[in-house]
Structures are given as C-alpha cells and as structure tokens.
Amino acid sequence: MKLVIAIAIIIVVLFLSLSLSSTKIVTTKVTDGSNPITMELGVYQDSDCGMVIDSLEYASQVISDNKAWFFHDHGGMVKWLDTKEFKTTATIWVMSRDTHEWIDGRVAFYSDDELTPMEYGFGAYRDKKDNFIDFKEMSLRVLRGETLQNPIIKKQKYHGNN
Image 1 (cartoon, helix red, strand yellow):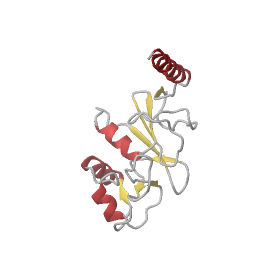
Image 2 (tube, helix red, strand yellow):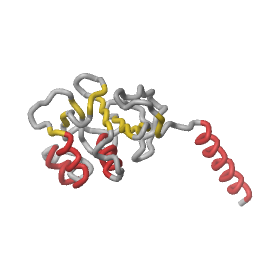
Image 3 (spheres, helix red, strand yellow):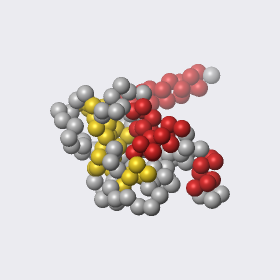
Image 4 (cartoon, helix red, strand yellow):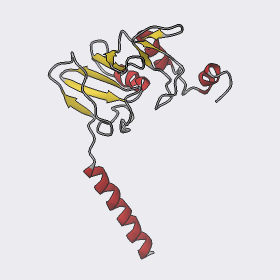
C-alpha cells in the first residue's frame, strides 16, 4: 500500500512540475489589431479547448481590447467568440488554406468538409470556390451544431464513409 501511495505522489509531482515548466500562451497583449500575431508552434494554447497549437493549418486569432486569443480550429473560435461582448467588433485572423497567410476571417470563404483538429470541418480560403460559404454562414452552422462533430452531418458529407 505504501508503495502505491509513493508512486501516486511521484506521478502527481511529475505532472505538476511538467505543467509549471511548460507554460503556454493563451492570450497576449497587442498594441494594434491590424496585423496578426506571429505564432510559434507548440507555444500557444487554444483559448477554447486548451490544447497546444501544433499546426497553423486551421488556426485563427481574435483581437480585441488590446488582447489576442488563439485557436487551432475555426469552429472553436466561433463558439468562444459567441460568448464575448466584442463578438461583432473583434478583428479575426484566419490561416488561409490556399495562400498560407493570415487573412481577415470575416471576409474569408470556408469549406465545410475538412478534417480539422476538433472536427468542426471548416477550412478558411481567400478565394471562393463552389460550395464555399461565408463567415456568417460558417458561424451559424457552428452554433447550430451543423459540423462534422455531428455524426449525421459527417455521414452526409462523406456519403456514409467515416
């Protein structure tokens, strides 16, 4: 019994020391929202789900009140932003899948069938293609649960292939 308690204490101490030594950035101060923050992989933490951002493929940033928040899936960003007073005035930057640069998230076009980190399914693009939707429609679908997280939607998008 003493051995089990000792092992449990060691595990707890290890986890605590690792979490303290690897603090991630959840929000940062900015002087101006006219440019996105340069993000380093493995340094920033998603403000919605808390996961470390290890890819910029579906990353987004929200800037308001001299602060920036970071996300690794546009769907999580929309859910998080919907609860904020500044949801209609914040600057939104999204990583474009077609140009691989930060673009204005409110004027981007979105696919709805991509395998994103949190399975919302929305990829951002600068240039519109058939079946792409705008920011407003993408946001509505996220808030209504019409994402690839929904098994019915996922089945429709992939014609029954999961």
